[in-house]
Image (cartoon, rainbow, N blue to C red; front, side, top):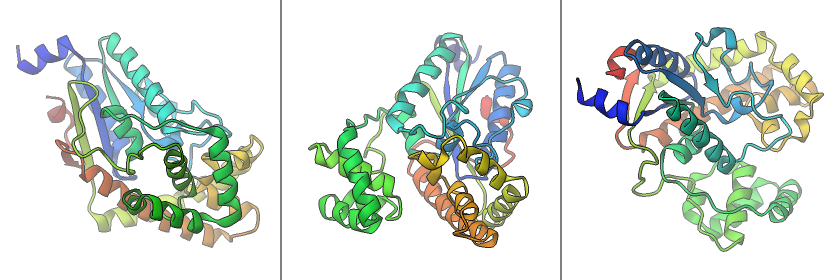
Length: 310
């Protein structure tokens, strides 16, 4: 019997399939689950995409329909309403609890997604600072009144290291960093610890990569496809469920632009173009984030899952 088989029998593995949006993580996670099952190890999939947590946000997040999940159990997909806030500390607890339940059933867990801080918060010993709702509401009011630029300048003066890693346009991330600093806490620097340790052993991380020029073409086409498939209609329906009151969901790439189109603040062409530009920028940040991980097995799209499962 192989050393891996003995290890797996003693302690199920946590897998993480990571990489930029549009690289084929979902397909590989399904293939990996089937490859593991073929070797006698059941596997279940856990979502690590912040926007796929939301119920009804399907087209713009490329959420895999239930009918296409090949009978493999999927967890933490569509578990929040669009009015809920997707807080990473909440997600860490929910994902780790789910993974623990999967492992208790004797199955491997496959964490799949491209939200870097969400993945890091699960697979590494990563503790998040406390939250202060009243303080955050005051900072959000300042954000609405002054704009992200003013709050980013404050963050840069207080914590240059974190400011270097935060998108100056991402008001939510800026507010969170200022909230933590105001409580006398150290931020996590919007990055991994210098020497992160794993939360669970054994953990195996697989990164999926696509050449940059090819990925750009693919992402631009994907955005155009979302509009053809009815993203604007999806967003119109979500407005009736409170999307515009959502702290996180309403700012999602594609959803914010579709809202602007519905409200007449953008034409369809402008909404698509801005979504494409933001998606390309987001993909670059994802690549940079995951490239910092140690011990990642990097593979091309369509990699042999059976070989990875060995």
